Length: 317
Image (cartoon, rainbow, N blue to C red):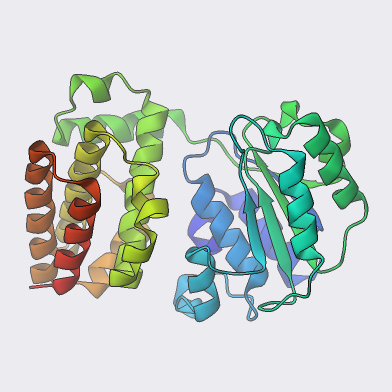
């Protein structure tokens, strides 16, 4: 949860935790992501912390409670996500949001709506959300997310508390890519992709693994949002299995008291997976991933491929 980001996003994490602890939560936040490759994980952790009835900020205390599980699964009625519809976020989307939030809440005394890529609001949508921000209700929190704050109207930014995430360390990013390329032979197509995109995909792969390890077969209900939305073509699938294999190898080595050398930014996830798996479990999962990667060349349906992977990995040894 939010405490996982205390090292990478110290300032942002402290601001948000203090606001919740002191009961001084803003009615509107503008999250400036600055290209941070784990922005979605940070955002989700912040939302969990805001809605947590016990104000837990770390997984060890929370134990992934029922409410946090529903938020993770995008199955929490008081949390709404708004994404661009095509090129733009449209006025109708925000009017529908306001209509939904005018109804009585069911699962929580707080309601949160998140506008992703907020800079893509068209003029009528921007004016519509401005009215929503000007007359805030006590139980509704807005979170606007953008990678380019300068494309938003000043009248919108002035009504939000701005939380700026720290950019990824460029040297660390380059080092991470180089470490991975030393272990995995990238195809020409993958080598042509920007490092930033590769790092975002790696973050999604590890997010998938982390969710699977915590929820097991339950992930079968969410393979679209956890996998298919991000890994579409053959190169994506090969990258997924290559990184997943490398990540589990890192966990296995860590389990055997070897230092983390490749996925330095994911030590807490590696530690958690190491604690909940035996060496036999990890070895078994690595074999399943290798077999799945070999099956990619046979053009097996992606849905069947990922479902089979999940079921076999859940089965253990």
